[in-house]
Image 1 (cartoon, rainbow, N blue to C red):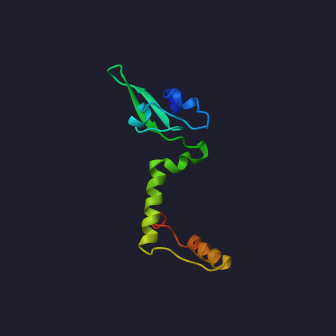
Image 2: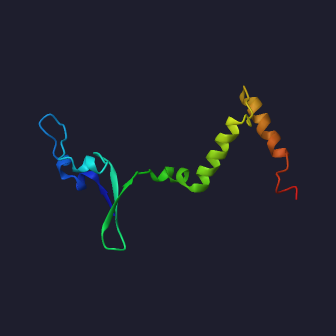
Image 3: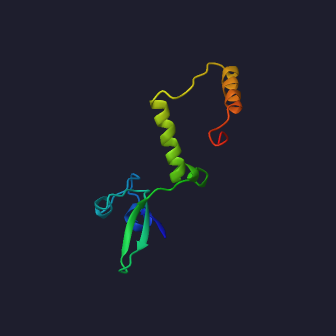
Length: 110
């Protein structure tokens, strides 16, 4: 179940006369603020645990998959180690990419 902080801290849903929001301090003590998302999970003991969460748009879920994060980390390492090719024109870039197609990959050489 996902609760928004507005459901958890009802005093945030009623702004003051200047549009500001005030809390009794309970929400700040939990380390959450207005607009934060919290997962409410029932534990084995029957209690509930509040877990801070982030809302990720569906079309960006692929980026948060562990395999994709690993690929991004390897790519960033390649750039840091100078393992990259820079081209100046679209024609140079296309020639470089075409050259990659002609080279057999490691799994094709076996």
